[in-house]
Amino acid sequence: MELSDALPLGELAAAFASLPVFPLFDTAYFIVSVLYLKYEPGAVEMSRKSPFASWLCAMLHCFGSYILAALLLGEAPLGYFSNNSSVILATAVWYLIFFCPMNLFYKCVSFLPVKLVFVAMKEVVRVRKIAAGVHHAHHLYHHGWFVMMATGWVKGSGVALMSNFEQLLRGVWKPETNEILHMSFPTKASLYGTVLFTLQQTHWLPISEANLIFFFTMFMIVCKVFMTATHSHASPFAPLENLVCPVLFGSVSSGHPGHHHDHHGASHEVSHPPPPPPPPAKSKEELNEGTRKRKAKKAE
Image 1 (cartoon, helix red, strand yellow):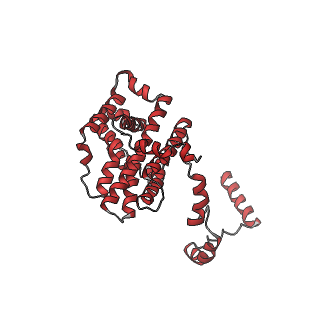
Image 2 (tube, helix red, strand yellow):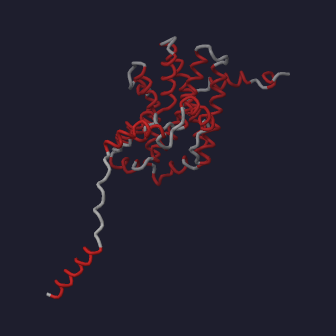
Image 3 (cartoon, one colour):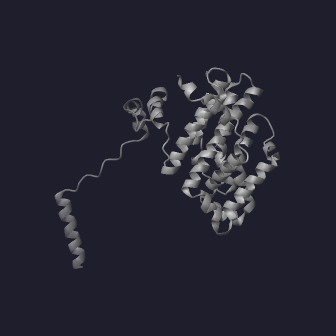
């Protein structure tokens, strides 16, 4: 008996892919997203001083991916906010996490075993958004591979690609935290995932969309739950990247190469003249004469 007959993965994957994400999985997505906002330095103080700015940041954390994808495709950036149920649900989650008496709701959802469940559920939504973004872009641009990949990537990365703009709403400017320069694991995984979904959508990857959603979701759940449980920031892609990237793109040099000095040594000598020679040392007679003069002054 074949494995596919013993384990009906096709039926399981199809049932999993058709599972509705609203409201259960969306609620988990909003909870984890707003939790990450509350972890930011100064976020709690800002919620007391300017609740509206805090709410705007929370909405970016929850719906930033839809805004970016709409901008890329020339659609209304605020179009998703017409979904009143999702906006009200995200607002309720934001209020409970920031303003619940005695922080009861925050303490419950941030309790590690409970949080791990929400993290796993968030990855279900993330992969579904990547697949939906690629599918939507494929419908609009049938042969636009890069449009599909860009749309799926921003759908999966969420607010990470808008982190600098979100920081400005909180009165913080940290350009060195640019997500494109320093990609986190979810951003990298969304990029690799959207490549897979694009290949599947254009029939270059011989797998059904439901199976790809199922397997990639399982991969994301295992990685994110493990990283959250161990408080690890190490990327599972790091070993492969360390092996492939130096071959394809070269490695970062720790110092200046030797031939650089050989080629530019002459110009360095011209731009930096040698220091003047030190004054000649005084002879023994001059030192004795100086000593006699000092003694004569003391005597006077």
